[in-house]
Structure formats: structure tokens, C-alpha cells
Length: 350
Image 1 (cartoon, helix red, strand yellow):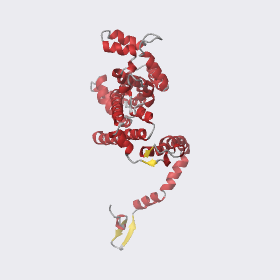
Image 2: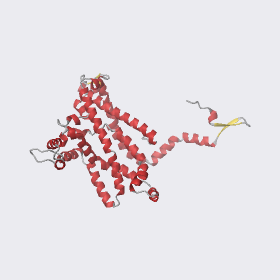
Image 3: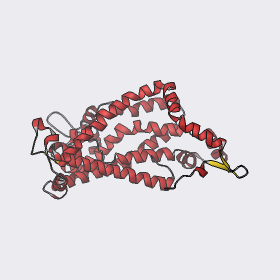
Image 4: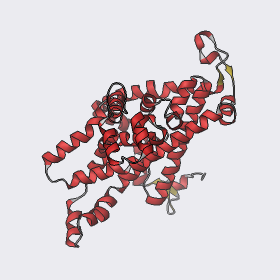
């Protein structure tokens, strides 16, 4: 680091042989001395806004930071339980839990679960990320406010239903034949579309979610139905913020609707798209545990068993080690995607 000298802040007067401080430097020094007063005054002036921030801080401390102490369980031996199962009293185990799930006996369960997690997450990113952007562009082109409002409410609605309700509806729609009734509505539609596809017909009879071959496709489809509409809110807000003069200039140059989307709308919302993509990549491996757990069955286990459900079934140091591995990879993906975005598009999350 460079050493600062008094010459860097003072001006030397050769005629008198003295140093003096410039007006700009005096202002800077005064600002630095009163910086805490400025911060305190700002907090007092906007105290209502900071008061609204308190509940969020409490939630993050209680449900995000305090549970991190349990991550030490990944380095503890759960066979040496302390009093009442206190992890603080367990023997230190080092990296043995990680070695066990990577190369030991449990590796045969961990790596297939990790592969399923990555494949489902990749499909969700591939199909789930562009869908909200397309919906936002569609909403922008609907001129009737009533029609747009009705459609938006319909596509937002699944997000406000619990995961159990959404999963139950999906299971009913693609249910197979049983003693309680015929196939679900979507299953009958698929059966009518492809009556000669024996593999599909067999899967429909047993229920599409119970088939390992169709589980991932159905999971991504239901995830789109549940989240695409709600996720489009951010992109729609970015689209309607585009200046009307930009559309007028494009129209004067002879640009049609598709050309306006390509050369006006998409470049204008690119920063929002990049930020949301980085955040989406950060949660790439955080596949919805609740939905997978509700859909998990012996018929689809080879395709539906993910790291989160596997860690829950282990319920010991190996499970914590598996989840920590998942989260560390997610953190690396966020950092990497942020660096790439900063270099490629000059837009980054931080």
C-alpha cells in the first residue's frame, strides 16, 4: 500500500515557506469528522423505514444464521451422542462424513441423488427461467387492462396455494387407473393423443408421477405452472418501465412488434434478466424438497431421490455433510456466474 504524506493534503507556499490546507480538503475533513452524525441524522429522519427492517433482520437471524451452528454436525460423530443428543458433546469426526458419502459405502446413494438433483435443477433453469420473461412480454402486448388483469390473477394463483394442494391437484390430474376410479383428466388426454405408444399407456395406467421415465418432465411442468406467473412480476415491472419514446423511435425506423421486442425491450431489461439469472443459478441445486418428498414413491425413486430427501432419510452427520456439499456448490455457482456476468455484460449482483 502507498504511504500518505502531509504533502498529499497540504499546499506548499514557496514565498512564505509554509503549508496551507485547500478549501476542498477542509470540506473533506469536515465531512469525515461528521460522517457518524450524518448517518445518525439519516436514521432518525427515516426511522419508520428502518423500523420496518427490524422484523426481516430478526427472521434472518433466527432462521438463517442461528441454524448455521448445526453445520458443525457434518464434522461430528453421531454415534457418540452427548446428553439429550447435544451435538456440542459429540466427538469430533473430521471429514469422515464427507469421505463416507463421496467414496464410502453411502456413495452409491449420494451420487445418484446428486445427479437427479442436478438434472431436475437444470431442466427447471432451462424451461423455468425463460417462461416468466415470455409471460411478461405477452402481458405487455395485451392492450385490454381487464383481460390482462384476469390472466395475471389466474397465472399468479398457484403461487398462493400450499405445496400440498398444488401437488395433490397435479396427482389427481395425471392419476392412473385404480379401484377408486378412472384416470385423471390429463392422463385421459395423453392416452387419446398417443393411443399406440405402449410405454406411455403403461405409465398412464400407473400414474405419470409413479413412472421414473416421466417424473422429471411432470415435475418441471408442475413447477412452471406453480411459479412462472408469479416470477413474471419482476420482468413485467422492468418491461413497463421502458420509455415509450424508445418504441416510437423504433416504429419510425420501421420496426414491427418482434423487432421492437428484440431491439428495444430485451436490451432494456437485460440487466434485470442477468440479476435474476444469477439468483436463479444460486438456487439451482435447491430443488423443492417438499414437493419431491410428497411425490417420492418406489416407482419413481431412481429419478426423484434428490440430495435433500436423501439427507432427511439419513438424519445424521452424513445428511448434514450432503446438504453442505449441495450448498457449497450453489455458492460457487453464484460467484462464478456473477464473475461471468460482470465480464460479459458489465452487470453483476455485487
